[in-house]
Amino acid sequence: MRETKGHAHPTGPARDYTIESLDTGLRLMRLFLTHDALTVSGAAELLSIGRSTAHRVLSTLEGRGFAVRDVTGRGYSAGPELVRLGAPAGFGAEVRERVGSVLDDAVRRTGETVQSAALIGDRIIVTDCRESPHPVRVAPAPGRTRPAHATAGGRMLLSGLTDEQVCALYPREGLDGAPHAPASMPALLAELAETRERGYALSRGESVPGLYAVAVPLTGSTWRDRLALIACAPADRGDDAALARRAGELRRSAGLPGGRRT
Image 1 (cartoon, rainbow, N blue to C red):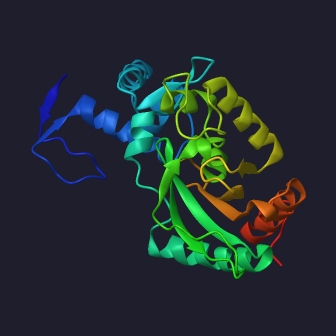
Image 2 (cartoon, one colour; image 1 turned 90 degrees about the vertical axis):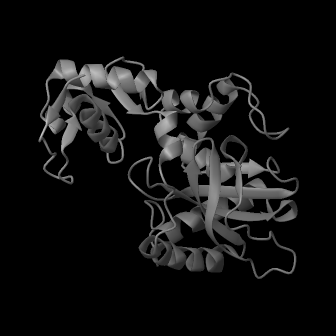
């Protein structure tokens, strides 16, 4: 590791000393905030460094859990340590205002309690919510966290990751949490594949008995800023037809393809 005096990164504050390899690693980690995947050559080009340097830094990040390699062995994605460190989306004033209007529309369309949620490692956190007008309804839970694999919103957000990222978040084959949630990694990966194909995630009393939920993607182009939009209802209003219908209503609120805002 070489230390040079008097060097400052052009976009950062002036410093008396810069450890070049550390600076390169930090700059490369920042790329994962805006890129779902990076190749060695792509990282080298973006940072104006040699391919061998990019490969060594990515391998080091992989060894520490800040990056994971895809099945081809050529690309890298954000690892579990980086996902845990990333501040959850949905709490900034601008995002809350934008998402708030979506929640207002979604509760009007569905008549059920609706929530937005972000992923933090292997858990989700509810960032905002609107309560159903029904006398019997699901109580909103802003700020509450739950195991991601045991919730509709969590599985919706996990489905936006690669299988390699999901496996890194869950290093053991057995999964804890809820009795009716996927109990193993193969079961979870199969559920996530179905979620990607279907376009929405379902939960039938897995995290909370008697609570049925459906979730669609709400916003965000990378793992860092994705949110899920969730509608929650008591089981007696949660049959398959009702859940599928609410998925379409949520998609219309979110302005997704197949459901434009009206």
